[in-house]
Length: 426
Image (cartoon, rainbow, N blue to C red; front, top):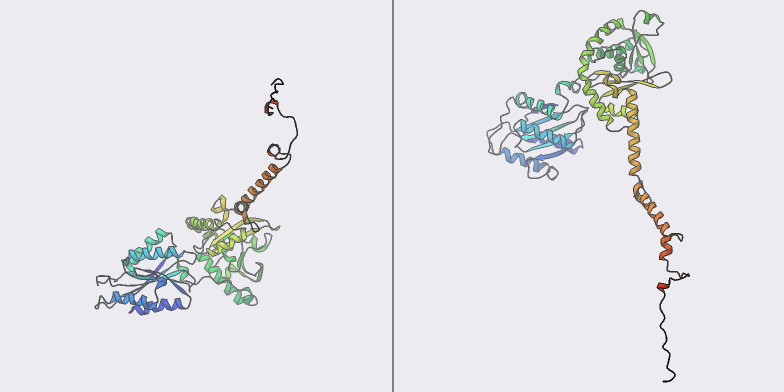
């Protein structure tokens, strides 16, 4: 995280800057802290009035406004709640936790960032000292927040200020040897000095994303036997094209011998970066991508370029990950058994099966509005009712109201009364 503090001459200037972004749809006011109303209930004038009311408590102070921007790495995607937590924590650590302040989320740059507008005047009319606040309080707060929230450290955020390596456009340079050489040299020099790799295939994985490849030629060829190396352009299909350039003709001297010296040194350096790459991989795999290509798209959002290695028959036999944020290259198997191409494919397949089973259990019938389990229950219920209503069902026979014929047990017969004989003599 990179924190930048400015002290504008007026609160109107800082507020206008952010509110105009909101009007243009390039920013949103997330929260109004220590205000009497929520941010969505405040218009520009109510926000300004709140600050002016506080500033009127001190007529002597000349600097009354604090404007902070907190900038995050492009690979970081934070929720609004997390951004608000970070903003509140940061303001508390620099001594502005009790002050009224507004938090704006800007969406007009290639990296996520928020702006915070506040006043230096306290409720008792005193002024918060802002002398060297950036070097002292802010720097300490930044480091503590980076550690607490697991943010990309400012020291590793140079890509925000330094331009990235631009891929060579083969269409533009294919017909000119000088242009080809210049384009290849720029890419090779930047990758050779900036990236961490421990083999020629890893070096090539980093180069390929910029349409360049280091080629040793065929094993039976003269270049290969003499341990030579040439650099070539790649077209859109990944095929070699254009005029090859000898390694010795490039200023940084990216010969095979010089590269092999770097392999040993950079092997040790990149070892400490394994956890960062594995964390990104796990985060993407946790989203249950349907296949390898869906996983590649998720990794691209985290600044990881993925190179799949295939044999002549088109079967995948390896995968290489290029972390452009940390500028390091790893083969999947080097990260651990669970990250080889076979292990990843197996894991993705298992996730697909589990997802299908879950959908089957929770499937929904659009016609009846019932789930799979409910439908099965209804079917069983219908079978039970049909059985009960069946004529052959013993229970149905016993409970039937129809007239039945058959012998009745003697004990159940109704006894007839004997008629008394009349006395003839009476």
